[in-house]
Amino acid sequence: MVSTALIISTPSHSEANAASDESNGDTHVSVEKSNGKSNVAENSNGAHAAKGPGKHQAVGHKSLLKSDDLYQYILETSVYPREHKALRDLREMTARHPWNLMSTSPDEGQFLMLLLKLMNAKNTIEVGVYTGYSLLSTALALPDDGKVIAMDIHRKNFELGYPFMEQAGVAHKIDFREGPGLDTLDALLLEEKNRGFFDFIFVDADKDNYVNYHERLMKLIKVGGMIGYDNTLWNGAVVAADDEILPKYVRYYKEYVCNINNVLASDPRIEISQVPVSDGITLCRRIL
Ligand SMILES: C[S@@+](CC[C@H](N)C(=O)[O-])C[C@H]1O[C@@H](n2cnc3c(N)ncnc32)[C@H](O)[C@@H]1O
Image 1 (spheres, protein in one colour):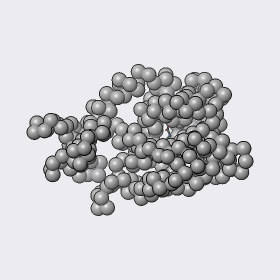
Image 2: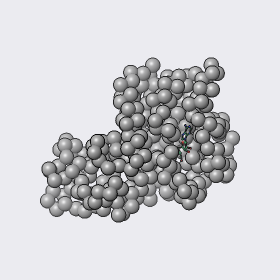
Image 3: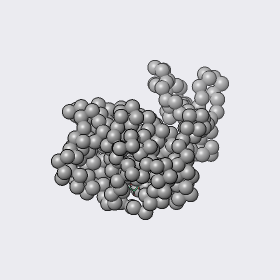
Image 4: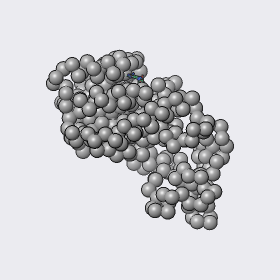
């Protein structure tokens, strides 16, 4: 399944060109949309600029990523210099793989590592591995006796990334299980010891099953533990108008992503935060 994580996190210069608006000093962005619409003038909030400043600007604009250059700045200043060598090698190998758009972005990997360390996470689950950038990030952040149960329908992409996990000296923390995520989670639920056991769970696989994952994961995560659902801003498509032209797969998953966002927002068993890192990650802390 194709993730849009890198579509949004690494737009090319032809997709987003910053241009200064001398009238109010705001930076506006001319976006060459991948949907074929050309150069729609938008402000840094993504709102159309013709009608004046967007409402969020009026009350204190909080969105950070105003341009491709700003994202590049974050990568070059804060992410790449601190990236573990095995992660960098894995990222470079993955960049040559035909499905490389699926990979978790390095800034998101860095964010996950910090989160896991802040939580003192020891036992985690990952749904959707691909070549394993987020998996290796997780394994690096866990203590030496930590474990991550990782699941994916395709073993062969995981095997491409596995040598980098060995190179990093963290392969012993990884328990890979091949097969559909729902089946693997159901198998885990059969064992009483797994219920309420896990500190952190990262979900980055089939978006049309996020709601089905959620009910299972709420039984596996401990009270006080965290679930992270990836791609919850879905390349910005969550706010696309019904008649907006979107790539077919973006259109297909849009309603599922909007649905899980509504489900999470109304679930009293969790506290949540929609974090606009990469393609959006919704953090859910189990409280009941
Ligand atoms: C967006 S990629 C995961 C990227 C990964 N987090 C990384 O760091 O590169 C999604 C993965 O989910 C897997 N997948 C798709 N459907 C699945 C399912 N039903 N169960 C488990 N994995 C699935 C795909 O094979 C793919 O490797």
